[in-house]
Image (tube, rainbow, N blue to C red):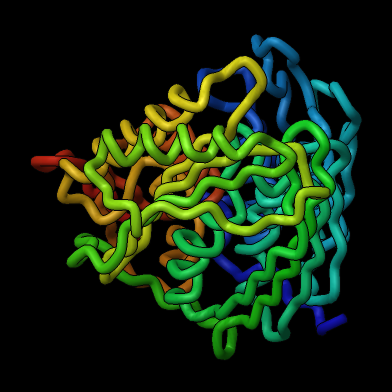
Length: 365
């Protein structure tokens, strides 16, 4: 276990007392699980406690799910927080952070809850420390409404690395909905002296590679063929761009279709997870549509990566005092809600400006 690193000074929004409680209402619009996970991240990084009420109110199943409880437990382990209300189906939680510590951590999510979302909760807090950390994750790696392992490895991690903190990720075992059981190992080497360096990302650069992969585990091979054929016909991709990776068949059942676009300055990955009652063609059309929408834009990154990127970038801007910007093909309601949350914790200015083919997001001290 490494030495503790205290939250940096100047963390509280608007110059407020870092110990002042931030009161959040999880019932508004897109203020769901992501709001909670990001609040945990921001609380750990700034030292500001928060209370969230009405968590996921209005959803088909309101309150905390297993993945949310796992993220709270992970954040608590990383910073020794005092927590109230972290119970399955609970509607509120109070989180008072302690000192973030580097170390060797193991986090698990019951069932097929996404362990990748748990990783994204603690990663920004650990990357600013003086010592490296190792994380062992167990749970879902390819689940609905969550980034798959390959998205984190190919799209998210390279941007995090460019901030100055280098990561290594290894997929040990796939974990699909509803069984879960996946495994991921992560090493995070922090930036030198904990100094994160924000950067501009306004262009994607020339296309270097474009390819699709279909994971099929304990699922008939014709499912993969149909998904890849449908995607190829929609996008005009050639056979050499279509792949069915070898996967151990005891890691399922499960199916995921992924399309990767590697550009000079950023990589995007679009995915859909096969579910019972959803045809292979429907899965492929969903991925194809997202790829086409991104391709017609001139932006550096797509809407989902933009939603994930704004928080670590804002932390780097806050800690360095250096402004940065990026362009994205679309700004979702989730992203706007995310930006509103960041403003509650950080004294940063975040502005959004439309341009022909997307949006520019500017983060300044």
